[in-house]
Image (cartoon, rainbow, N blue to C red; front, side, top):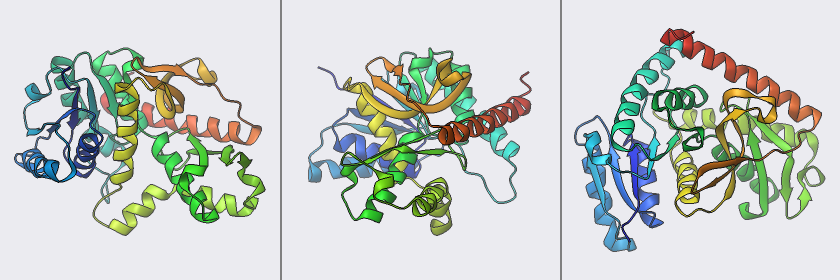
Length: 314
C-alpha cells in the first residue's frame, strides 16, 4: 500500500520539526513547501540524512512549487509571519491573510481532498479564513490550538506535583490567546481532582502562566516563538486522522450551535478520525468556566470582525 502524503506549508522551525516527527513516527512521505528558495530543500536533505541513523524510510522533499503537494492526504499550514514590534493587529491580519490566500489556492488546486490543519496566527481568524477560501466542508479544516495550550497546562501541573505528565489529564478551551480557558474541573491526576492536590491560589498562578506560556517562550528566545510543542500538537492531530484513532482532542472547530455558538471557529473537545473532525464533544462547564468561555468567545468574534474589516468583508 502506498504511503500517505503529508504536505507542510511553511518550512520554518515548526515545519521542520513537524517533518522530523512525521518521519520518526512513520506517518508517511513528507513534502516541505516554502516560498524561500533553498530553505525547504536544505531541511529535506538534512532530514533524509537522519533516516539511516534512526531508521525511517519515508521520503522527504523540499520544494517551492505547489505542484509537489499534489494528492496530499494532510496539509498543515504554518505559513505566515509573527507579529513584530510596532506592528498592529490589523497589520498582522492583513499580511497573513494575504499569505493564506495564496496557500489556499495551492491546496485547493493540488490537494482538494486533504485534511487541513491551520497553525498560522492569529489562529482563530486564520482558520476561519482558510475554510472560507477553500470551501471545504467544516470537518476537513481545523485549527491547532487547544492541544498545545492543554499540554502546557499538563506540563506545569506535573512539575508542580513532581509526577509524570502521563498522569495529568487536563483541557484548555476557547480562543488561542490571553483569554484561553484552562478548565480546572477537567484537570484530573490519577483520578483525583487537581483542587484536592494543589491550593486554589497556586492553581490561579499556574493557569495565569498557561495563558502567557507562548509569550514566555518568545521572551526567552528573543528571536522567535515556540516550535517543538506546536509541531508535536499538529502531528498528534495528523496521526489521529491518518490512523482513524477517534481521539478526543481540544481543537478549533467550526461550531454550528454546539456550546451555543454558531458560525465561529472555537476550541472545544472534538473527535478526530478518518472523517476529520467527526464530532464535537459537549462537556458541562461550571459557572466560572462558562463565564470565561463566553468572554473568550467575545474576543474571538472581535478578531474575526477585525479580519473582515481589513479584508473589506461585510
